[in-house]
Structure formats: structure tokens, C-alpha cells
Length: 318
Image 1 (spheres, rainbow, N blue to C red):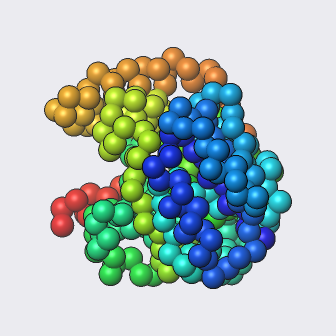
Image 2 (image 1 turned 30 degrees about the vertical axis):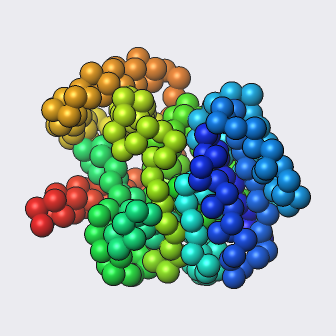
Image 3 (image 1 turned 120 degrees about the vertical axis):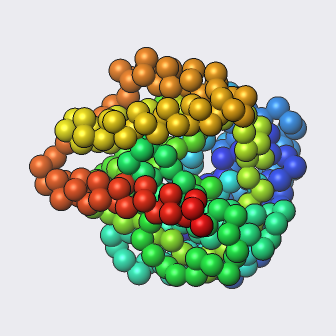
């Protein structure tokens, strides 16, 4: 069985379409849980009229990480699908996601083919990658939906529409609630990689995604501030000290470049403040315990980070 968890915050304009698309699925062995982060855009009484939806409202907005953790802990299914409220699933979505994750017991997360809702000929996300300069990026963003047709390993599943093997959370931990939102999926996928699990892209599992519908759009001071802070957290938390020292020049260079880019867009201060907050609050972040048996995985991850960096810039040059 699949447990579908939808974290919701002020998604009244999108949530019903998302729910309706779930009810049209070719695979129907699922339960549906909605965790509401104290939304202020309605009472959501209409959701409570669905007898088969487990609706839980939190007392305040704790962010994406806390909301999905609440849902995962309530889940009865072997697999947990995390789904943004501004998505619309194609009919065979659950079936295709399930095929991929059942194909290999070492798979932790499966990332779907997310398509831009308002430009349905273009990809929004085909799985996420992470680089040695500390930049995550969405594969296929803005490319034709006729591309990225191959099932393949990726660094991270995008948690906006991703299927996870529930039992692995008990081993690697849940989503880090100190992240609040943004890059929390990179963080948990990084941990899965450390423990030797895989994250895979499922091209035939397709979903339409509006994107940043409840967080202020693609660029906002709120989003950039938190993203900058979390870009400090991810490498600090997941890299052993030696790896962190080796990569530090690349990470600093990546931050300096982004600072200049966002300054030109008028968001320089928000990004800078986020970096400063990240550094000041590192003491609150619990590092992933280093284990000798994971050394081969750390070496493989380092190779991935370098490869993804070159791939990112090669794509930008096209």
C-alpha cells in the first residue's frame, strides 16, 4: 500500500484539483493524509467531508519538513508518496512510481517527471542533482517533455512528488525540521546515499506542477533567505570533516557567485542574511555520524558531486 502525504499551507486554490487527480489513479491501494500547517486562507471544512482522508491541522506553520514527518509517522503503507498541493497527477502516476521502487530493494526515493503546469510542453523537474560548489539543480528544467525518457539513478528525488520506502526512514532519519523548507529533500537523499541506498528517476510517472504556489513565487526574500541558510546546513551536516575541508574552497566560491547573481536581481541582502544565519546556527545541526563502512559511499558521493558540477556548466553552455 502507498500512503500519500500532502503538506498544505494556504493551498485552497490548488488542493481540490490535486485530490481529484488522486481519485482517478489506475492504482487504488492507497491512503491519503493531509497535514495542514495552520492555513489562514479558509476553514478547509470541505476536505473534512471526504471520509477517506485523514486530515490533521497543526497549531502553526512548522514548514514542509515537520508537516511531512507528521504524515510519515501516521503512514500505514510500505511506501510513502510526498505530494505538493499544487500538483495534478496523470492517471498512471502511482502505478509507474510503484513499478520502479519495487524493482530494487536498495531504492530509497523515486523522483517523478514533473511537468510545468502552465507550459505543458516543458519539464519542471526530472530529479535533482547536487554539486561540489553546493548548488542543487533540477534536471531538465525548461527542456522539452520529449527529453529525459530514461530511467536512471539521480542524486536526489524532488520531494514535491516523490515516493519513498518507509522503513529506510527509521535507519537514516526523517526530514530535518530545522530546514523548515527547501533543500530538505537534498539533505535526506544525501543521507540515503551515505548509507548506500539509491534514488531513481521514473520518466513514465508524470505530474503537472504549478511551482512555488504558496511560497511567494520563484524568487522571494523568504525563499532565498531559507535556501541560503540551508545551503550551509547540507554540506556541514553530511560531509565528514576531511571531505568538508577539501570541498570548502569550492563551496565558498559557489556562495560568492550566487551572492553576486542575487545582488543583481535585488535579493543580495536576503541571500547574505541567510548565509550568516546558517553559519551562526550550525551548532543546532546534528551531523550524520561517520562510519568507516561508509567510506566507499563517501568516495562515490564525492565523484558524483564533481561530475554533477561539470554536467551543470556543460548544460548552461548549450
